[in-house]
Image (cartoon, helix red, strand yellow):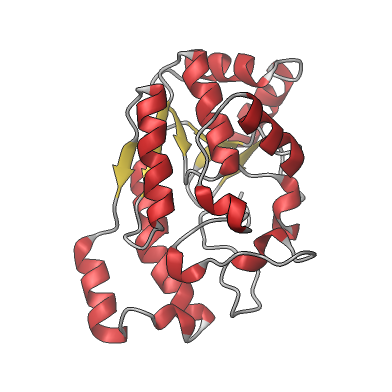
Length: 236
């Protein structure tokens, strides 16, 4: 059934612009379309589109407790500019307390398994709570961000979270993203001007060097697939 719905959405929206698609989704799934923002460049583009669409699409963010101050700054500026609420989801306090008590505050540096455990507690569990009961999850994923994202589709079913994902910026280039932000005076994270392309938790993100992969600054101390579990391989 999910595959049929995805194909129908692809067909119905094939000639729509991004803003037309947002309006269509909000009407097709009233009160059940949700957008997750980390206040990065791609997400700020989508936030701007959603604000201009004047729909009831819910915008939310995950506060892991380890974010950069610059991320909180752009969060604040975004609220002031668009005057739309942004829901916030935190990790469960007991889970974080137990992790720090048993492994300390920086266990993620010790192994990929520890890092994924931290991501699961701080990001995956809160995300599952946020997505629960919704029909469509809008993301800021772009194909050129990593090899893992090259085979994504505009619409797809995410079996991990049992929800349809809409990836409106999938074919956008970084240059197109930056041009849109500049031309529309959209608030941006100050870290982008310091070489940060993909911005996550402060202990796990660094600026990238010229010629490095876009995701090189995330979990730079390990050689993994550079994903935290929010956008892992699809499960049908």
